[in-house]
Image (cartoon, rainbow, N blue to C red):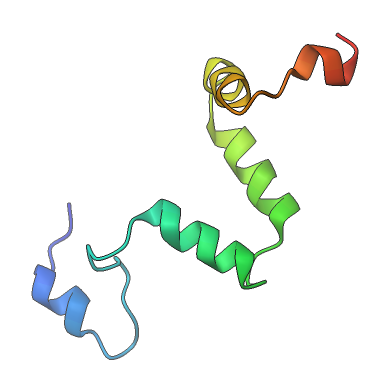
Length: 73
């Protein structure tokens, strides 16, 4: 936890370290990717590196992606 007050982060003239609660991190990440501020390949690699194998399989299954069939496994 930070030693700074929440007011410091929202009023920091240098830029916010922590976002306001208006938009989720997911929405911000999608927006930055769609606006070309982040490379989609980099985002995929970051997410895949952070998520567990089970989470990746669950996400793919929910989006009707069969990795075993696509990758020949």
